[in-house]
Image (cartoon, rainbow, N blue to C red):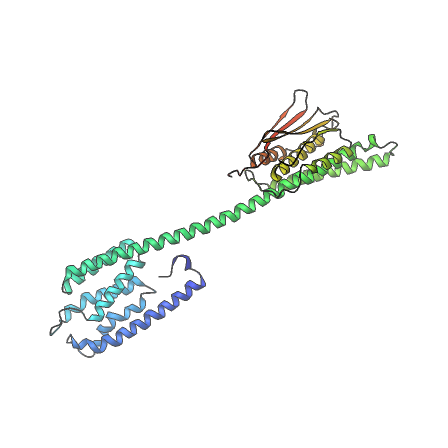
Length: 390
């Protein structure tokens, strides 16, 4: 009776225990009435009165625990009792009133609790019994049919509510899971954008120190080379960590921390590492939303990091321009001057991450090699971001 959302919970177990005690009390009360009144309508020997009256009403105590068994005992009693005893006086029923009540109540519980075939079977058996042993059998059949329809409708409503509750719970679990995945993606992307960018600059600074700082001793050169090797190993370890954290296809939402003005500081830091950067900033930033500014910052950051790793010695051009309702971001570099590539082994997620950033705010990004051996990244971002369905 107390299934569905309560089943298996402490509250459900408590209600089940309460219902069992309730049915026991009701059965005992009914027995205390049926036993002393049975002789008023049927000639039953005193020693059998507690037996037949008990068989008629005591099974009600089992309604909460085993509805099928309770209804079966009562139905068998209703079938057997008229074989041995007939009513006397003006009483026209073949059963005692308490047995009529027990059969009706147990049949209704069969309608509510048992599978549909068993519920229909209980309706059929009870209809036959009432038609054979109660006056106005057609009326009883009609009443049992109406009760069946009402109970089935109640079951349908309760089942729909249970399914709705289950679906709501599944949606909440899926939403929580999606939140975890998005957070993992955010962490992975920030690690790539921030840590990898800084470590790339460390590699470049360490390996170009001997050309930028005059009169370096051989031990100092070896020390800088060791720093570069350690930084490259750290970059590879970061990429391994990204393989664990990053979930393909998940678009993470970011708090708009860096702004377009933050690109100036990033450019200065890149120049301080010995990399030549030509920078054309946007004239005005008032019309650029925070989310667009963040995406532009990360795209420039990743593009510079890629250029410093894979095209050491090449000059880099960064240009931000506003064209109507969009912000154009251009980052391109010339071909690699030295033969050494500091990108580390394997393919990273940089270009994919940049594309996802642009798409997450309704923009687009293209990253292609140049004919001269360089590389070009072009992004078109809306000045005012729009929600994108994921």
